Length: 297
Length: 308
Image 1 (tube, rainbow over the protein chains, first blue to last red):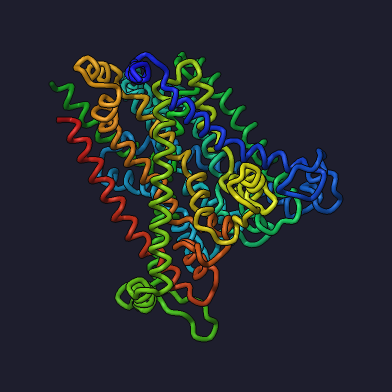
Image 2 (image 1 turned 45 degrees about the vertical axis):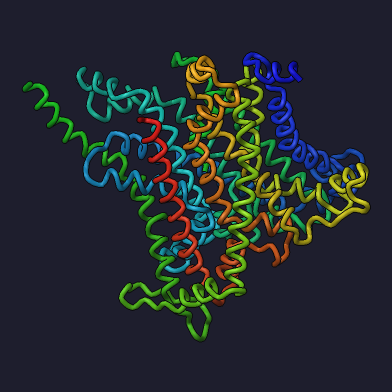
């Protein structure tokens, strides 16, 4: 009993309960995904038992595999298309907005800041309904489908770029632009030549985040889809998750996951490389986690 | 001193430049975030075309028609009515799932932040991984596992907890809550981690030096300090849970577990009573803004107390 109390009271001892707890959490968090990936390689049609190994549901089956079922392959293409459009448009728009909102002090600045943060706490179902109704009743020149979905993705991911870039801007402070201005640079030159190069790591990070949350999005894509041809991977999973007769859906989900991870990894390596050339050091994964934590929906 | 006067003038001029830089983004949000809210109101306060059954929005606030809201409020305040049942159920699911998520998230975040050591990088990768896996894929994984002949039943029968496989996916609250906790817990862990990682360890050493046991040090220093992060984590996962409809749809498919989000989708995509769906969205938004207001107030208060 005393030994147990000593063990408990020892400030340098390992918190064994917490080790076990965290390990169990990680297992619980990751094993279901590994199981879903495992079933995607099934030889048989079961989605709940392991039945050999094959690529049947990826490429081989002539009708039902991801490659040969247009409903599945088009979902992957649509997800990817939307994520690329979202990243390409949201990042420049968000960087300009972040710089503007951080430095702008005049009338309207506070309201603009509040509005951009409001998108962060608005549930997606509210934003999805709002966008659906606005495209059906008012901005009728926007067709439901890819354009409407892209507008939705850009709207809800803008705030993530703002938060990430703003955090970096506040850390940098205004002195570099002021120095550039003192040396005769115009305002635009000061931003372009002094500020933007220092923001590159934050810009790369926000690009990855926008890509990932666009790939992950379900509600906006579903509300603004015009039919099967513009369904994304999550929409397809929702539509057929309970009824799908084969593991092809698992194969589709696995492919999407692999694609997202590859792009996130490339982005992460790029981020680490540009960060190193800027002479910033410290735990890269830790800082990346902090970035992500700030940008959690 | 004359220098600073010049600077003030320059700053004023530069303010216009910063506003211009923000303009495209602000314009975008005005067009695709603020305007749509007005359209929701106009649809909710509008009428339905008697022939085509399509909604006709009422753009003039002076002519707004409250029929849809009367319908929603009547359903919310009549005991036993569908809206009230669903609303109370949503509250219960969100409360239980959020509490469970906190019980899971806090110790994990605490462990990684304080004791991660040289494993921290790897542990963080494990905590971040779910962010790159689609929420719907994570639900799909549980659909696989919870099937009649799935691995959950296999394990439970083998261990002897169950005599025969159970159908987990035919309208069980427990499956929906499991899905919600599994789906949202990563979003709570990361902000908690980021906050706990920043707590100054010398505060804990001071508490220990003054005679506190490790548990007392945790209860009297770490826990109060992390209250703002706990509140933030709760709001971060509770808000999207209130709008969730896909988790119950995928893990139960039964009206007996339908949440407020399912009702909204039913009316918005069902066609004939879109104004009722829009009114439900407005009511949900109002309810959540009360939550958000409380959260802002509580966070400010917690920070004031810490500042003192």
